[in-house]
Amino acid sequence: MIIELKEGEIPAIRQTGEYAIVAITKHGVEMARDLAQKFPGTDLYYMSKFARGDEETRGIQLFSNSVRMLFPALWPAYKGLIIIISLGAVVRMIAPLLEDKKKDPGVVVIDDRGENVISVLSGHLGGANELTHEVAAVMGARAIITTASDVQKTIPVDLFGRRFGWEWDSDEKLTPVSASVVNEEQVAVVNESGERDWWMHDAPMPPSIKEYPSIAAAQAASPQAALIVSHRLLTPGEQTILNNGVLYRPKVVVLGMGCNRGTSADEIEAVIKETLDELQFSIKSVKALATIELKKDEEGLIAVCEKYGWPFVYYSPEQLNQVEISDPSDTVFKFTGAYGVSEPAAKLYAGVGELVLTKKKSGNTTISVGLMPYHEEGRS
Image (cartoon, rainbow, N blue to C red; front, top):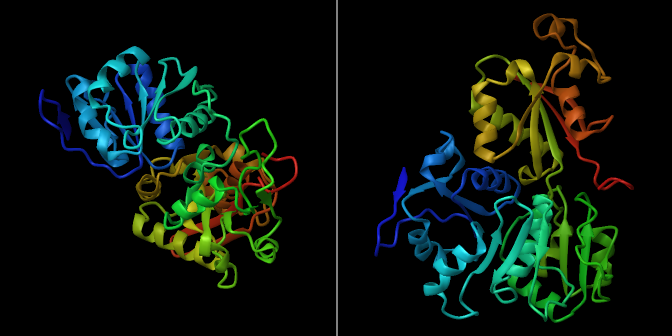
């Protein structure tokens, strides 16, 4: 479906995320598609003439005619707009929509070469400054902040770890935890398994924010608020830390999978959910699904990856055979050219020598589970 933009009419859009990404050039669309994959909580809009054919499955919204007529619909719907259009053009297009710095969304502009990410509007109250830092970190671009009072070196709770793909489990406590951070109350940070370089400022963390090695240690300190980064399902005893806390899911779980030809997406998804429940891992922490090149067109695997937005990665038999595995199979080699599929695929993508689940056969599938080792010293 294409949104036909018409003068004087506010178009109907499907708003599912907090942020909208908008692009109108061929190169801008390339960057936008990549950014939308890496940056959770975004809805992507671009011109219909750049359609790839996968827009419906990926939830991408296409439009025709002048992008200027799209902004009246985006303006009240989103917390922030990430626009890959020239700065001057953006200023002219949004000028009629400006109302109040307490109401206007944050606006961030990216140049067409992806070199600069510029905070344009609602830098503080609209969160554009924090959004600029996060987007720039994802893209490897330069963050440009011009507000003179941008001196508060703290944590934007709603964007914490967004550049790594971290997702919060629930938004219920975002507002009170944000208030604790701003008011310099004691805030505990427990990073069990996410990337280590989450602090984005040159200055050290303020005394009100303190890292703890475990949830138990944080609970013992009785902080006013907490930010917990973990792929695990918390135990009932640990849940109390979330009375005024936000739980973030880092993308650290790697699924290695093999399956019989024609295995349904429903069966594959059921095995994944069952396995993650057994491990007490959150499905929101899945980073990617990896398999053998022979399965690159396996419809069930593709459908599950598309449903959850997971990268679908496959390796050649030669690549898989370079990985040491626990139980090489001559039978698997006979049919695939590799001595194993799920185990070496998970190890290759995760970059580890050991898995949390080496291999489990279930119905028409075989699954292995690895963890990205961000929690280990020296890995980030």
